[in-house]
Each structure stands twice: as C-alpha cells, then as structure tokens.
Image (cartoon, one colour):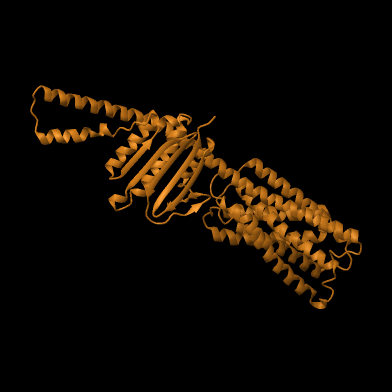
Length: 454
C-alpha cells in the first residue's frame, strides 16, 4: 500500500513539474508582485502539501473518470492561485496564462503517449527488464524536453511577443478555457477506460482495435490542445491589433484638431504680417524716418509671411507652412513640390496625419545631423497619368533596421514609439495605395503610390 502511495505521489510531482515549466514560460512577461521570490517559495510549499493530499485522494478515486478529473482540476486551481499570488495581474490574465501552460503540458504528454503506444505495439520495450522504470523516465523526460522546446517555438514564443500591457478579450478567454476543459475531461475519461483495457502494463493492448482507438484519442487530445494554444495566441494578437488601431484612430483625430489650431495660428500670423508690412509701406510713403537697421530687422521678422506654402490644398498648405517655419528655425532645408489638388480624395484627418507623420519622421532623422548640408528633407507630390506619387527623402545617421517592410523605431521604448510608420501604412492601405521604404547611401527613401481612377 505504501508503495502504491509513493507511485501516486510521483505522478502528482511529475505533473506539477511539467506544469510549472510552462508556467515559467507563459508568465515570464507578467508584472511580478512585491516579494516575488518569498511568494514563489511559500506558495510552492503550499502546493506540494496539497499535492500530497491529492495523492492520497488519487489512490481512492484515481481509478474513476470523475475522480481523476476532480484531482487534476483541484491541482490546476491550486497552481493558478499560486500564480495569481506571485504576479501583480488580474485573475483573468493569470487564468489565461495558466490555461495556455496546462494546454502545453497536456500536449507534450499526449505526444509522448502517441510515441509510447507506437513503441508498445512494436514491442520496443520488452527487453528493458528490471531497468524498465529507469529507461522509461529517461525516455520520457528526453521526449518532454524536445516536445516542450517545439511547443515553445511554435506557440508560446508568439504568445509572449504580444503579452505586454492591455486587457484581454474575455470572450476569447472564455472560449479558450472551455476548449481546454473539454479536452482535459475527455483525456481523463480516455486514460481511465483504456487503462482497464491494457494488458501487462498500461497502454499495451492485445486487440488492434483498442490500439487504434487509443491512438485516435491521443491524436484528438493533441489537436484539442493545439487549438487551445492557437486560440490563446490569436487572443493576444487580436487584442494588440485592436489597441494599435485605437491608437491610430486617436492619432488621426488629434491630427484633425491640430490642423484646426495650426490653421487659425497661421492665418493670424499672415494677417499680422500683412498689416505690419502695409504700415511700413505707409510710413515710408509719408516720409517717416527710421533707422535702416531697424527697418531691416523688422523686415526680417515679418519674412515669415513669405514662408507660406501654396499647393492648391488648404489643409496641406497649413501643414507645410508650419513645417517650413520649424525648418527655418532649426537650420533644416525643406524642399517641397506638391500638387495638393490631387489629394482631394483623402479625408482631412487622414491627409494631415499622413503628411504630418511623413515629415515629422524625416525631421526627427535630420535634426540630429551635425553637417548643415545634410540637414535636408525633400517632399514630392506629383500626378503621373492615373497615378499619384508621393516621395519623401532625407539623410540620416546610423543604421536603419526593417521589419515587415517598415523601418523599426530607434527609440529605446518600443511600446510607445514606432506608430508613425504604421499609421502611414494604415492610411495608405485604407485608400488602396502601395508603400515602399528603403535606404541607400545614407538616404532614407519613402515612396507611396495611389491610383486616381475610380
């Protein structure tokens, strides 16, 4: 009886070890709670104590499907509570990570069963003799290590890439937990009843029909767990895309507001400069005498009026005039040839956001360049037949890395920068355009092509 108890305790410990391996992988991007390591160690001691009690219960009820389900659900709940204790996250987030880890653990276990049952059918293990337990565990953990690595590369790595920040999609979380629950329940029922059909040792069958059914059940479990892991990955990816879309929509809205402010400001500047120039002309006509240097200084001050850009599109005029003034003040040469009338198909907010991000990205790159002759930004908007071409060029220092055809932000905090190029791409695709970006000889080239046809 004591020997049987030890076997059940080993089963519980092996299950917990495998589960915590995947907990460590799925939860490593979460925010740790204060006193993380004392919580880890204290909680682990409590879970081990509960596992000892579960092993006692397993001896009594582990031979039934309901009993086995109850034991494993209890252990899963205890470990999920431990996970919640260790991380400063909401319980749904912790449950999400725990469900993904449980699915990964079960996937690796069922993959091993497919391999093991195949070996039993081929009688690979008949010669192991007295060292059967040793060889079994060596084979099992070598297989588990390989399977865990494959599961990490195929599923968990992509999951972690999107795990930072934000709220989960609770509908998808519910679907994931439900799918996992169904899979675990069916697996437990399958394990219990096929254990009764086994001969000599578990998962060895005399009848070919039993072997085929067992492998079919194992394959179903593998597919179920894989679906759960794909759902978890799609959940966080969908959440991140929704957050990014919300940010970009907010950026477009802010661009509309900024345009209104900039337009009013520039209109006021133009009116004031025009008035001053008129008054200077009136003074000169009346013979009023002013010092030449004072006149020159005043003329220089109102030369801002000459910086007004006219493209045929009022919104683009406001934006380019504003950027021209910035370039004048910061020693940047801004060259622009734009047929603004051809941009009428763009909504005001999209137009302002598109060109605002294009020019701001270029100015960000050139303003840190030391050589004055390289502090140059060129912008071209030109129609060619039924196509509209937008080209932007600027010098830059350093290197530029690309991902998915777009330059990666050089800012240290990748979570809150790099939206400019993505917003440009989103707006271009919204209107059926094409975008390409490349670097050559220290110059960044951005090309956008729109069709002007219906």
